[in-house]
Image 1: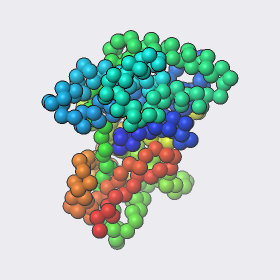
Image 2 (image 1 turned 180 degrees about the vertical axis):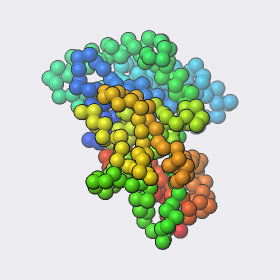
Image 3 (image 1 turned 90 degrees about the horizontal axis):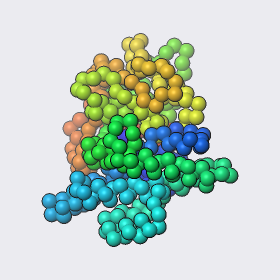
Image 4 (image 1 turned 90 degrees about the vertical axis):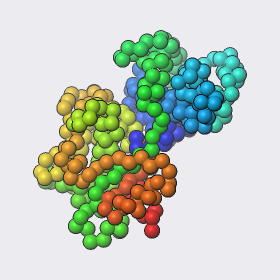
Length: 339
């Protein structure tokens, strides 16, 4: 989620990956006959943003007239989403050849064409997979083509509206203060100074520390879409676990809710709803804790801008980048790219 471009790439390449970012039990459940695809709208929004704004970055919209808000681009984005789902006929694809924008995009991302259908069939082990998929297709075609803008409905128009509101895919870095008591701040970082552990708990493994940092980053990212100074955010559990690269067949809260991390004897994280089977949870991080270590996000526009930031603040702050979603993939410290 720090690097949304990496998230986008995971959704449009290698649908049969052994390490997918879209966790199948979270998206599809148990391949039920009801044809549920949980969280599909979030995935489609990332793809729409990647399409609309990548095109806008390459063109000068004032000259081409094809900025992300143009009718032609919005129609093209809907076609991208329909084809990504696998909901397009050969005749529709042939008609798409008349649109150079679509043709170029699918040449760049050939595996995006029918990605969801290929992903679904790869993981569905039922002998009735073809029949099941037709039920999924019929259900989601009705919903996505409905033109319904109500907040609790999923349609292509709703997805495009959300994409335009959120803007281009973003690449951000997580920043926080170094240990003031460390003897040598240039050595490989040891971030155990950031927390205490409940009595009787083992020292956390690197994978758990990665989750800890990703939780803080996720909170700061989502906080930007909430009213200023609001101390809780609405956390999408599915997207967070996708960033972990970890499925959750049993809906095990302990996978993501790390209540054994303490600061001054108090839990660092909290949640305001303890019911199970919730995909959206009110989630918070101790504001005094965030302030003490000065946790924040930066969004350098270039490698040079990042290096300038490191030169100015690298002695006092750790700067971390997103390395993707593969299980146990750490956030990478980038301070030492400046010697």
